[in-house]
Length: 276
Image (cartoon, rainbow, N blue to C red; front, side):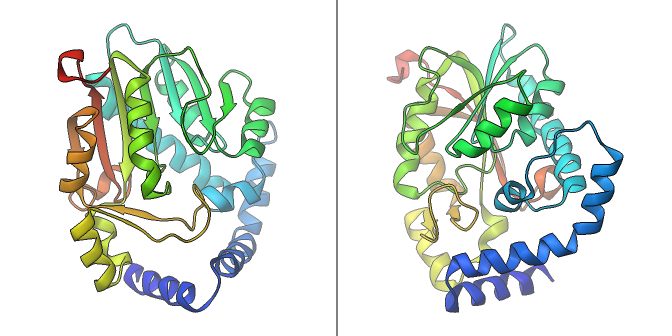
């Protein structure tokens, strides 16, 4: 069924503008989840609920799944991070935080850390600042540097961010994030790896194998329609220019973790390796 859905989406995108496809998808999902969303809102009157349009752009407009899966994903990421986290860790960043779906749950699972969050979507950051005041949020630009000028982070989380950043910007962001880690800091992030090759045509898969990265070049940077795919072996070579890879989980081999994305855990290279 998933392969059929992927084929239909590729087919629609090949004959229709991506904005039309996204609008059709969103309208269908608004209708599909209308009743369950009303029920969720009634059952959780004190819980801040982001606008459904935000959910449609970053996840899907389903409040129950949004909160449930956000908590589950944060728990998985926390379990993977803790063995590598510096003992004296105190500052963490959710890079590409959107509406704070993971940020709030990461704060619950790692309360000793002071949490920051940033995103290129100013409207989402404004919503976060109004409804999640216990976290330090700021707007990020499409290009480095990060908005928190003087802060070094012991942990940086980037969930489903490199999956939507244009390929030409990825190396500069990897360098920036590595430089903003503390001496023993780590970064955990995800990519579209081997589990997502079925989303690509044969020609696109061949290009991915040759170049190590494939950018569908649809939509704006960071949007849901912009999809980036990585060949793990070639991407590791790029990563190790600025980081040391501690662990890599192939999403096809570990679908139980977060549903199929590859997970990378890296640390900052020591000074004697030539990287700040």
